[in-house]
Image: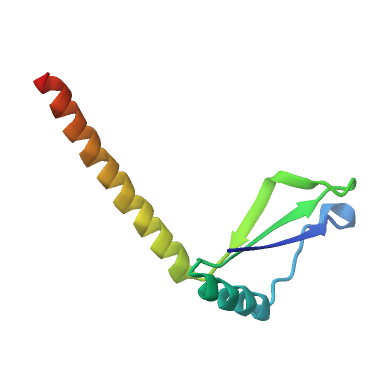
Length: 93
């Protein structure tokens, strides 16, 4: 589950956004109800009000990030094992 925030770049090019803990607590509570992982995504708007897509960030509790990275690693390893099995089956034909 994502909560998106944005703000305009301040005069002089200063980029700053304030994320309060209660925003994290809110999205975490909502995400738990839906069985999802909570993240706050934020970026900065240019002078035209458009989000700079090259400067989008996220904020989450560290344990959520570790959990996702662990799952990615597990799935990558599983994909490699399947590739090896497929390769062996193709060699057998």
